[in-house]
Amino acid sequence: MSAMPLRAPARPARPSAQPSWRPRLRLVRAPAQARSRLPFLLLCTAILGGAMLGALALNTLMATTAYTISERQVELAQLTQTEQILSDRFVEMSSPTQLAVAATGLGMVPAEGLSYIHLEDGSITGPAAELVAEPED
Image (cartoon, rainbow, N blue to C red; front, side, top):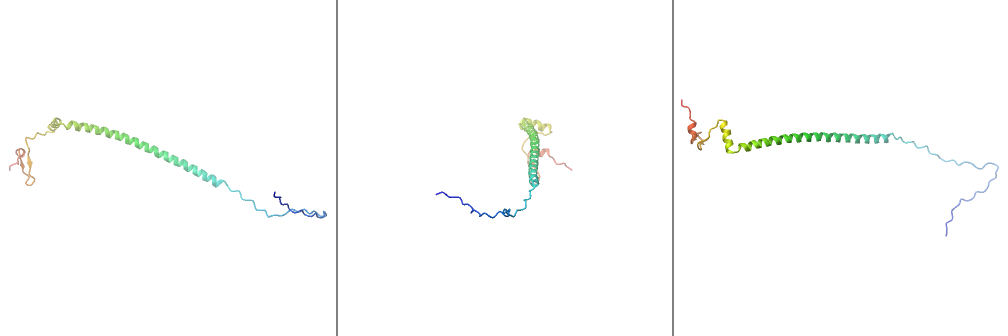
């Protein structure tokens, strides 16, 4: 069974003495205010500007860090070179022969034997006791 469309009932014809046609009146709303695009454009501009300033700040920070790293690498190379020089000198001075030559150059004399200092009374026993003679009055 097919559905039949509903039709409005036909109006009876009126006498044509007066025009029966009259427009229907209806309530018309006031036109909607057009929204300004200015706040949206300002927001987009602020976001874009903030992103650009953030990228600039990040780039500046990275460049500063790169210069600091470069300076630290130069300092590390200098310290490594100094450490190597001092290590070489230590190896040279650690041999007994080189140590004896350096001590003689400073005016030291080799010890003839073991000597001891007694802390209780400050006396010296051994071969060094003869070298350290108390002056007589």
